[in-house]
Length: 85
Image (cartoon, rainbow, N blue to C red; front, side, top):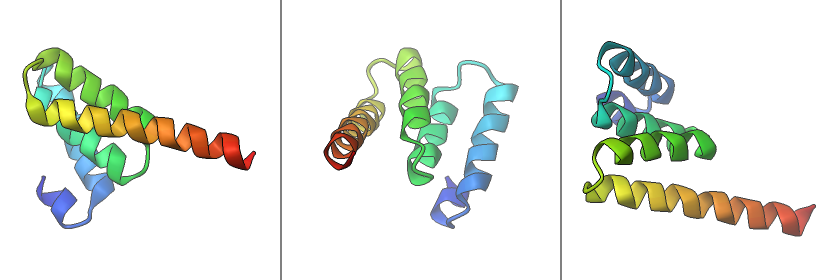
């Protein structure tokens, strides 16, 4: 979380990846990984990370919101690509 706030997005992603290697089933690490992917504009990877987090913590409102926002961005990006192709 600190690296994200400092703008070190790739470092934040590496930290999340490391946490996931160390502890399987870490919803918070999947959540942070998703946030880093969003910030790096890798929306498909973000959706995947948020979905893993939600699978582990199905009642977490923050995860649900981030997943919904990421899915919406995927839909919007798809629509924009259709218009401009």
